[in-house]
Amino acid sequence: MTDLSPPPIYRIADLHESDRPRERLATLGPQALTNAELLAILLRVGVKGESAVHLGQRLLNTFGGLLGLHRAPFSELQNQRGVGAAKAAQIKAAIELGRRLALESPEERPAIASPADAAALVLYEMSGLEQEHLRVMLLDRKNRLLEIVELYKGSVNSSQVRIGEIFKEAIRKNASAVIVIHNHPSGDPTPSPDDVAVTRALVQAGRLLDVDVLDHLVIGQGRWVSLKERGLGFTS
Image 1 (cartoon, helix red, strand yellow):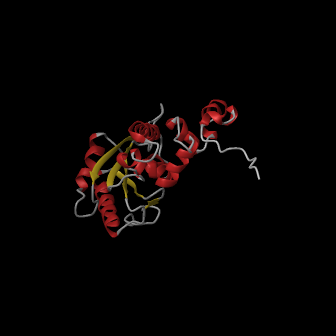
Image 2 (image 1 turned 90 degrees about the vertical axis):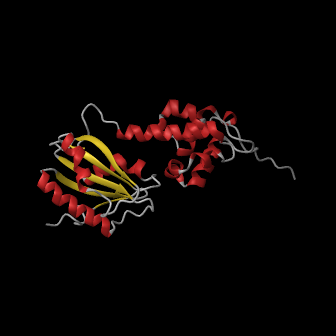
Image 3 (image 1 turned 30 degrees about the vertical axis):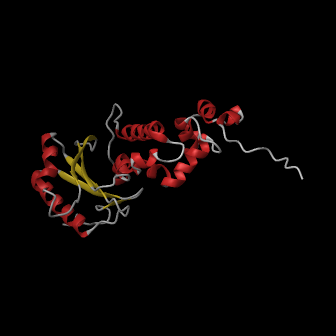
């Protein structure tokens, strides 16, 4: 019996023009494309038996989505079938541009009105960090972002964090308030006893220095926790 089903499509060029990622992007905008299609535009071509879209989807499946691609070591990404150094560099560059865009301020600096506002500025990038980092958001009197300063990389616990270092840049930049943020590379943003102890010490020091500690956020994998909302370290 003759198989009359159409052959599988392995090349973008074999797709109808209206189904090709670049044409769809030009017509509908990038927001209309799937993650696999956006990756296909970066990859340009696939490999034998696999279109660029299928290759993009395989990478997403292999690494666990965009966050996984962000976290993946360059060497591991470039060793994937059909990728190589050039395509791996394009993917990493695109992700980094997205990270920097999220941090860029418009003409008016972003105002932080809630823990969610603060988390939105760092969640994407800090979710992908493989080590623990501690950063401080410096805010003016209207809670507008002045700068995000990284102070620690490595273990962040009550015995290693120097409280004075947290406020040094705040005083230098004449910041009125700060939000402390650090990540848990395990992916679980549940605050530890050390996180609570650091928060308590920061709040007390902030009162003495007339710099409000508005919150301490813990970033996990795509999730975050506000110690202020949970009343951890902020109770009088």
